[in-house]
Length: 135
Length: 477
Image (cartoon, rainbow over all chains, first blue to last red; front, side, top):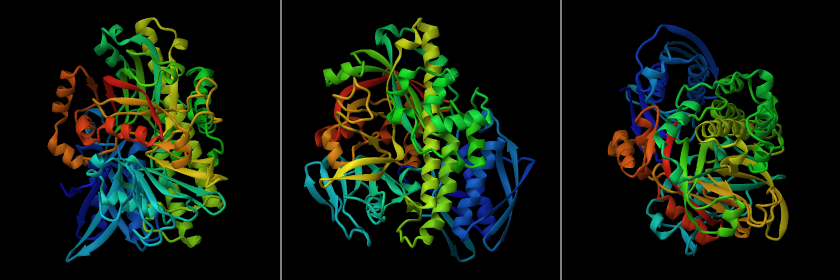
């Protein structure tokens, strides 16, 4: 597992690491999908998304919110994201597998990505994200 | 009790101004000595954070189911003056108008001989869990109807009766809905989900009335000992989540634009009368209406199952009441002797209007508004009535549930879904869920005891017990 679940009473708080900002965002997307669908693997469906925000922490919130949206309306479990960040603009080529009730049942529905305690920090050679998902 | 908190009365506590910088009013919450052990510093901090928001009136409040959430604490209530105050999605949450309704069935618990079959039929009738889709195929016009007219739209489509509407808070449709503030993306999420239960803490429960505390009110609400009831707990689904997500971004910008300084970005807000504040209110009211329509459609599915299995007419199954517990509403309250127009945010809190309030049907008016407090799986649920004290102390509000005390990570380590399912089965409570993980997450042990939370609101006078229900079977999302 590439993320750890931290203590939070009502919701799900996680910590994700990535060597680059792009990797951090990609890992965060996989973490989110693992929480919602539990068993995620690889897939070959492709989608392209773009999001903008005022700063990096807003950008991750917008991106993860977009992941929730695409996943729900396209019935697609997103398993990977090739990310490019230029300033506060993000483009991502998503890959995923079709949602299957049999395979992907067992996770927890995430209602939203919170700004509370949302933090991106740098530690030696890696970026660290902490984020709360409302479940 | 945590340091710095002052006791005002046996069950009332104050978080003084200065607990966090910039507080405009003190925080106040209701809790017993016993449950004080479960109070988290994070929740108190969030209660204090809310007290820094512009235009807050009297107190930042929390009910005894207070716990650490995001933005407002869960169990939080705050009222803002219309002229100087703000509106914030952080005071409502992602699941706009998450709420509960109780349907009274003209059956006694001894009539339920085929309980397992009933649960299976209900489970098959109501789409539940992550990824579940509705059997309804809505047109864009029909979705617009849901957003504008709420439960009334559902009744007009044949899902229920006119008489259901007067038994809903706001008659199942909030005024001020502005569907033009609901984006295409939110609609896209909402289209396939009308009449779905969702997942997480949402449920549909078969209950029996075990105890009546107040004969007069119970009679008026149509309940008798041993009677079967169905409790439905769900909200505005993906549509509401998307509305919150998008307006939060807009209001983040507005917070800066209007020079509002906040200790937590999730409290992003705008003046109620600003274009951004109005747009959020209009979208939030629309999502609330979607939720009322959603619960109305689900209730219709339940009536259909009972009608088929027990030869009961739809008209014999009476909706007792429907309450919202994640919402912001425009209400009038008397504050320090002065009538004020306020925007009351309730996040994990229930409206509990007292006797004689205008929004109640005639037969309920002498007793006050019915308040529905769901227990956790395996524990009692309660029906209470609103009081005059609540109008004075809490802007007519009370608790919404029992309140979590154990995180999901701890719950998962401590309990397996199978163990929880088997131990409840030993008590005669059947659980039906798409998977066992959903069960462990919501096991009775992860919540404060509902009996204690309800005892506190009753003793504090902010609502009074009418009846207690025990679970017989639960469908989890």
